[in-house]
Length: 417
Image 1 (spheres, rainbow, N blue to C red):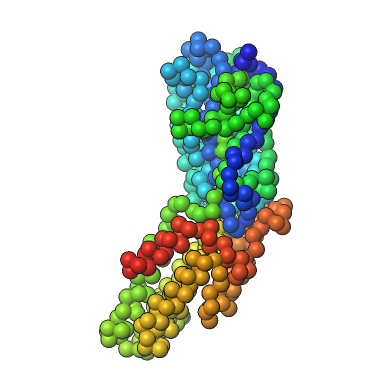
Image 2: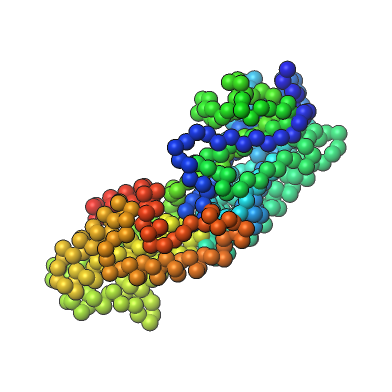
């Protein structure tokens, strides 16, 4: 017989789906994201007529240096279902992983049904999700997520906690009073997804627990039957190789590539003399006059953007440096074909994941070292050495095979240009 919600043992279970991708979560290479997938409350239907469930989920990254807290809104009992597909909701969008343990704490409680309170809890859920997303999207490579944004989220979540943690007769804890907490090390996050099941009810045999897709939602099954015991919250940790969003400097980088191409075409169409064309590839004191000045500013924007990994930042910077070099070589030698040849050499190396034969190798190394030096202070100090990717020139180029979308995007834009 299934345990009633609010009774039984409090336990956390971890399930890693089968995958050919066995890479472990690694600093400088990977992004981490957290999704609230679904939750379940096993109560009789009439219980929901005067009670409602709500909760919070707290995520600590970098061994507690980054704190993300979100409200889960209210449990919606619809169509006789006791499962609330909250979600498939991204609590933390793709975040450049900075090392250390990942800790999750879940709290679920029931309170007396109240329309006004339900509205507040739903609004708090929307607001805190927005705060978490804002913390990720504004992260600096030097200082991490904005502490001002984080403080706004903490103010909201503290109010929700006060409502849900009060011990009066109208409150009913579904998990333990203090909530359920689980910490996982980066080396234990193997493959693209790991599922964390917070559960209170009968003790489950992990070998009989599965995560399966049911009507576009991933849910826990026990002995091949949808888990209907006690109360549970399913959370997913994602590990990915590429950033799927758009950064503010992406359009600036695209425009810069177009300007370089146009500058080469102008010279070979006879619209600019050599000395003037080559002067574009020298920095100036003002920092505002030439294409080289523009490259330096773009490089800074990319390197200081704490949202993207060192691996991706390196690729962007090396590509921009390559087209600057290619343009300069072509104009200096009065041979337009050298422009395409230099870029083609870089692209072929990237597609083959090998270091190209180019005079830029020393410059590439300098750019990599500058980036690593800039970002070194944001890596959690307790991260195992093996969970911090090496960034030698060979490592950087051999890892381009994991950035297929990014490589394809640059090649497509070059063809269209």
